[in-house]
Length: 110
Image (cartoon, rainbow, N blue to C red):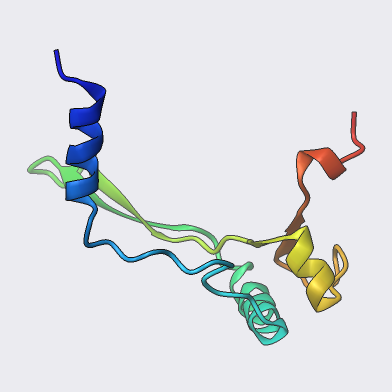
């Protein structure tokens, strides 16, 4: 069986060249980002999801089966944290396509 000290030494050697991660968020969302996403969401939300599929036919041209299908397009909502929404001064429903996500500890829906 392997000693825990050996595992720790192996882990230290494996990750010895990885730099420290800077503190804080890697990217802070801006109000311009939210507005641009909301504008694009409004333009694209009316589009129906598209699927690209092959139809297999018999020698007479009648459909026999549908081949592999690929989902081509879907436009989702943007979820931002309550802290970012407060920092940017955004309220729920202010920007279409933008959802404010609150921590469970702040929710009051039983």
